[in-house]
Image 1 (tube, rainbow, N blue to C red):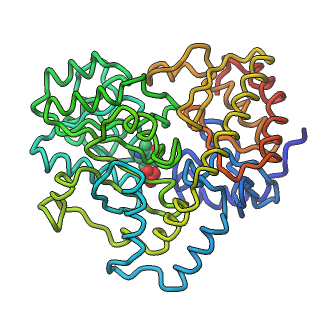
Image 2 (cartoon, rainbow, N blue to C red):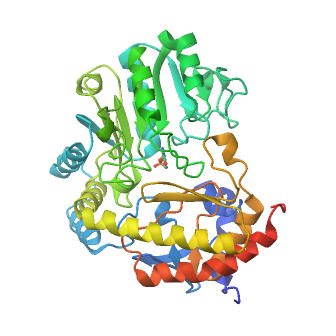
Length: 440
Ligand SMILES: *Cc1c(COP(=O)(O)O)cnc(C)c1O
């Protein structure tokens, strides 16, 4: 397999690095974790990406989640064109915002919802609201859960179970994270101990409804319900971050697979990605009595110039409207076919692997034991993943350029796209097996 020509991407990457840090506008895109030159994409349709050199790839990033229907879905394109032709932002309320919020309220347990422009804004605002509502300051999160780049949530895991944490990046003062408690995921004893010690200071516990940002690490059965009940018992709010899982894991997100079945609901939820249909739209919402503390109804301030943007809300509404049972069925079929192909080819190549899923959302850890926490996620073989990534890329399949990410599929992944991935797997598995334990 001759590697594709990438001179166009290389030239653009050089131009980009001269004017933008690392040449990218979000770090993972730079390929630092796998090496090589990121592909600059010229256009995309359905499951296919075309780069500036004319190479095509089956897309298993799907914009890191939003493209549930695939790229340039006709209904979304039409909605966006119609909206844009009517003017792109007014700074006044519009019917589209009401319709999108109603569509989300209809699918989820939230009673009131506010639109924002990014998942980061959604979690930042939810935490402010939780603190304003409870009059408490401490926030509990789990190691390995990503909630956007909110200062107080960019906290590394402390070594002890109930240590207040240090910032995970320069630029965040210790005072921003000293009220953040970081616990190991899926660890009930750590949660119980933290609430026993600090319960009357805890405003909220925030968790990914099913973590996807350390690779997919599903909650142990009953874990989310346990979190909801623990929060309730201590007067804290349970904030379920469904920015990645929302409208992807099921019509009602991860909650549709646990809370809806077990009969509980989070106090607050955050959404993004799929609900924006590839445009900057996100949201936070939940209990009406909590949401009523938000300005202008209540005292907790929150605002946004482009919140509820008419073009973004049109894209989101068109996406949710098109996302019917057939869409979720197709995504399930695609994920099943890929998981089966990965298991078969990796086993044949002698490449240790664990495929972890929640619904159709899955990721592949190159290690031999199930991963239940961030510490265990670190065991994945990043050198082997780098080899796997590049062998797939050379054969026209674009995996996420990091070993710790979910692989995203869409309802537009047709049999040809699926077959191209399956055909690429054996050689890539062999390359990865040969690279095991190396350095990257
Ligand atoms: C992507 C993501 C975010 C941040 O969303 P942005 O739109 O990138 O700010 C927050 N939480 C989770 C679970 C995510 O996956």
